[in-house]
Length: 358
Image (cartoon, rainbow, N blue to C red; front, side, top):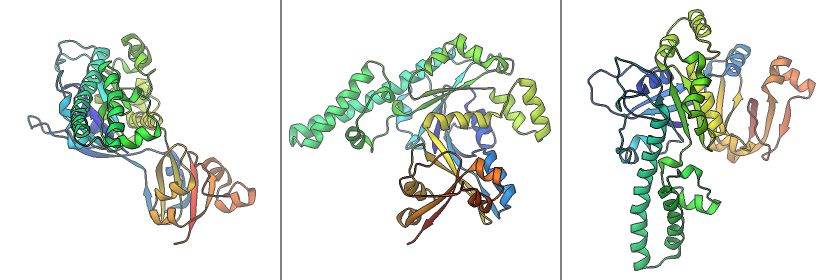
């Protein structure tokens, strides 16, 4: 999974990037450039399996984050041409909800709902510009050759243009399977699912849900493809660097039940409809990311295309059943280890061994 981090300047994007990926803060005064980093997905199930099997290697699932320079009103079109944002699965929009005399807001006041709506509109306008350019080319092609595929594509782009001119993001537009097939080579930012990470001050994180309601941000999450995650990026980045016991004590003091990294990734998985299945053995214990609803044979392809091509059966046990029984042999005796065919829909937490032949 690849996620782009966007937002205005001075909202805490770089601090969130540091929290998620462990990357050092950028050098002060340097030219803003996109930064890439990898976050390891926390998964207690993988930790427990590693304790059980004591493998040579433990490999968590990962998320690739790209932090791009802040934008201002009227600059959204610059995001469209950023190579770093191509092929991202989702966007994280960091919205500022903290006050600071040391770091003034670029618009002079802190208003997270205003900022969220403003950048959404920037994405819409940027996409509208791209759609208009494509329509100009399609019109020229149709005038010259009148190919059926150009006519069909033009119809789709006119549908998108109507939505965008009505200030509706493309993620709210319904496309049928054929329309999505024709659009698969295009990248539209307002079509991406968006996670609004609301950066609160340390003094507000305890009452995060109340703040989200008061600012009106909770209402944005009612729209499809939008989710909210409150965080106090600065203090939570500092907590992440503490020894485990000290970190737990600070989190309890702030009323937090899980670290910021866990909250952001968990919310991202839910937004994108992702799950994890696990493989376990003496060589390696590993977590793999899938879209919810994926069947067993294409799930095998997440490991290797040869396993998908030569798929025979999948040996599957639910994580909870494996932990309760203590071993695969005990699961086999209890009947909780089962063989499934290629049509089986993989469930979150399944521990799987694929049988294959190539």
